[in-house]
Amino acid sequence: MSIGAVPDRSNRTKRVAVVYGTLAGVGGLGHSAAAGIAAAAYSEAEKTFAFGPGAALPWSLPGGLPAVIWEKSPEVIPAWVTRYTWLRCRPGRASFLRDRRLGQWAAQQVARSRPSACYLFTQVALETLRWCRQEGAASVLDNPNGHIRNFKEVLEREARTWFGKKYHGHPTQEMVERVEEEYRLVDRIRVYSAWGKASMLEYGVPEDKVHILRQTVNLERFRPAAVHPPAEGPLRICYVGSLDLRKGFVYLLRAIRALGANRVKLRIVGATGDRDCAKLLARERAGLDVEATPGESLPVYQQSELLAIPTLEDGLPFVLVEGLACGLPVIVTDQAGAAECVRPGESGWVIPAGNAEALAAALEQACERRKDLGAMGEQARSDVERYAGQAQLEQLSDWFASNERMEHNA
Image 1 (cartoon, rainbow, N blue to C red):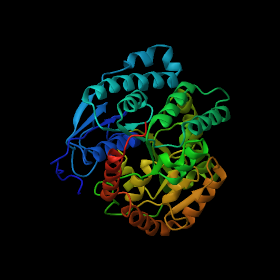
Image 2 (tube, rainbow, N blue to C red):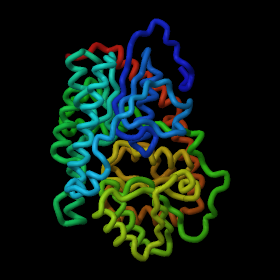
Image 3 (tube, rainbow, N blue to C red):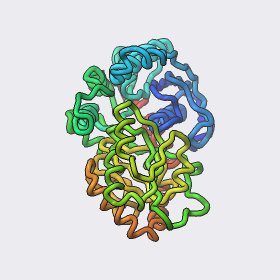
Image 4 (cartoon, rainbow, N blue to C red):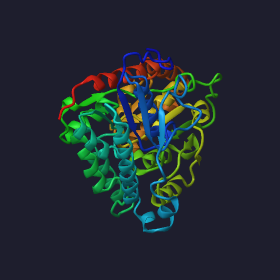
């Protein structure tokens, strides 16, 4: 079935529900929410309900906004509470409270709509999963990262390294316990890469629960610029994503400094997640040619020659498939599913995570092979066309439909 076509709903009586915690269509997690909602809408269902913060328009996927019954969540924690109360110093606790309250609200709506299957996003899924167990509804959990314990351990280590203090951000121990209960209760877990699956298995999740389905991307919107930027002056590199410790941005800045500040121009599209990271960014960018602003990523991709993704933990970053689709060679680490999408030396470089020296060496090679970067980007675009476009969204929809049909494991 083609995504965007009106499904044949004759003789279909099933209802499905999607519970998500991020504005659909905004950022990596928002794109994952959009893809999950679209997949559910085009699966074998009479009605599809979407319970969460709503959708951004225009819709980011091919086919336009799917036929979904949107139920927008209330503001579970007012902005002033996290800005002016003690929660501003405990962002991890604030995230836990927000996700738990959204999950509680969503479970009430799910119970009222009584779906036969649910597509749920981790952190906001627990209460609905308890309902699924009680009522015999099939369930799928979308987990875009590695295991929640690995997520926490990486951030705790980096906080000690760069801030010399205990980590108070997301995820808290409460959130770890919440998500691990989601893992136990759900029927199937979607991860985005073999790396993501290995992370889940390492911490004890049964292998038969975990299924790999990669990211999707709108290949019509994200495409190379009509005219490539000239290969002259400082090498133009971009970094797209949040500036938090897990993303490894500090190692990129250290690598650029080691290479030589005048050899690279870095464009950052993203925002710092907390005051400590903002101070770290300000300190490490001093003397470097760095432009950092929130905003639209597409023009930055199209004006760059290379994309750097120095992440320390990630299932398969959405920015990777965006950048590949825009014809950019990439530098990625071995602690993310991104490494599975790169041909070393042909469409990019794979380096050890958290290693500024290795990252500087890859940048040096990119400078030496600057005239080859255009051809490497063409290879990147060709590769991503084979797995991350409309066909991947259809595969996700078909996979979810097969989960709808399976008998619930009580």
